[in-house]
Amino acid sequence: METPQTLKIAAQGEREIVMTREFNASRALVFEAFTKPELLRRWLLGPPGWSMVVCEVDLRPGGAYRYLWRHTDGKELGLRGVFREVTPPERIVQTERFDDPWYPGEALLTSAFSERGGKTTLTVTIQYESRAGRDSVLKSGMERGVRASYDRLAELLASNVAGGTSCVRG
Image 1: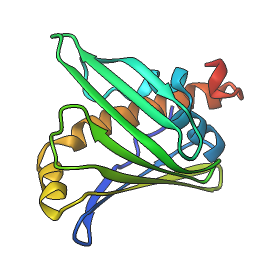
Image 2 (image 1 turned 30 degrees about the vertical axis):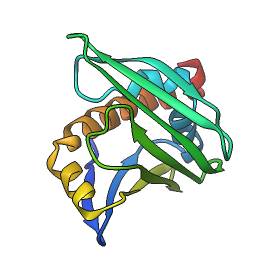
Image 3 (image 1 turned 90 degrees about the vertical axis):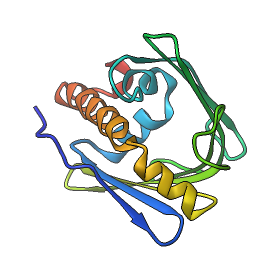
Image 4 (image 1 turned 120 degrees about the horizontal axis):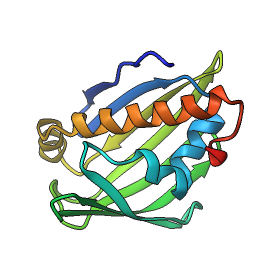
C-alpha cells in the first residue's frame, strides 16, 4: 500500500494557489484518472458524505465540463468550465466557475503532470480574478476536501497499478 504523500498548498504571487502532490503511478494513469468521467466519479468527491451525480467531460480545447455533487443531506454543489489546453499526459488548462459562487468570478486551473522514477508529481496552479478571492479560498477549509479527494485518487491508482492494469479496468 502506498504511504500517504503530503499535499502541499501555498499562496503564490498576488492571485494564485499552488497545490502539489506525488502519486505512486505513471503520469499517463494519473492523467487518465483526471480526465475520464468513470474514474473522476470514484475519487473527486471531497469530504465524506458527497457523491458525484453529474460528470460530463468534453476533453478538447474549447470543450466544456460539468460536475455536480450531492451531499447525503441533499445539498448540491455544481461546477463547470471550459478546457483551454489539453496536452496528454502532460498538462490541462481549464476555467472553473461554481453554480453558486463562493469566491468571486472565474478561476483558471493549470494541472501539470511530471513523472520521475514511476512516480507522478501533480502540480495544480489556480489563478483567481483577485487576491481577495484567492485569500477567501485559502481560508475556506478547501484543503480538507482536496486532501480527501487526492487520498482516494492515490488508493484508486494503487489498486490498479498493483495489478498492472489500466485504471479503466479498476
